[in-house]
Image (cartoon, rainbow, N blue to C red; front, side, top):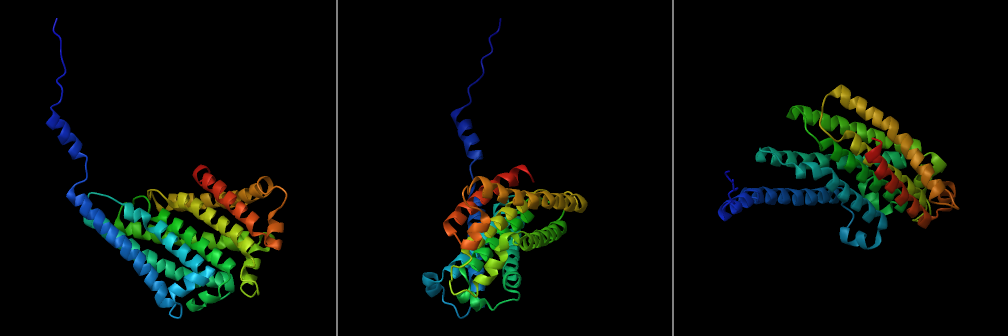
Length: 308
């Protein structure tokens, strides 16, 4: 009888196998270039807002203007959410990955600057001068920041996945970004009617109390961000065709918005306990509103993975 003994790999072969899986100098070079582009994107995005707000000094406003800080924070974090997919993209064509990242960075900066006048119209009835940030109420600032975060999730989903060609990718990103934004704005107009939350936010700008309407803004902002999470899940993935993509999106919206309303009712009844949304909004009770906003975000995050 013959006994077969498996030969033990040579230590050098083990080392080669380990080294083969390690990043190369080229990998580190590409990562460095991406880091540089990312930092330049953050700096350029911040600079474009500074150019629009010529009468505001960042250093001064950040020490006394809570609304200014809230809006700028929402823009910054929302833009980072948006650029994550092209930043994380990695294929066999390094040059293509870098150009995709550069193009995505420019697209996001342009889109985020186009959102502002739309939000102004939604909140105040007409576009505002960017320098009016000094006079923004905290409630309206919370809503604007929530929209930037939600829009960041929408763009993130639009950049996720693959498409048959570059032209199809560009068209799909533009189309689904537009549909996602339209859904967010439409949902704000629809759900904002609940207990007069949107009206309370709108009136906060003319109130003598700079914090008036904050409770309504916290709840409504959480709803907008929750919808952004659901839209991200609905949009993200490989592009398989216009018909299937649009139908899937519409079905997700048809489910997502009613689910958000159910989530609000659920949190209203089972988490708030002795109070309700109507009371929070009318009395501007901010601390319970924070609890409700967190509850809405927590439940919406789970539903974004289960329902959509």
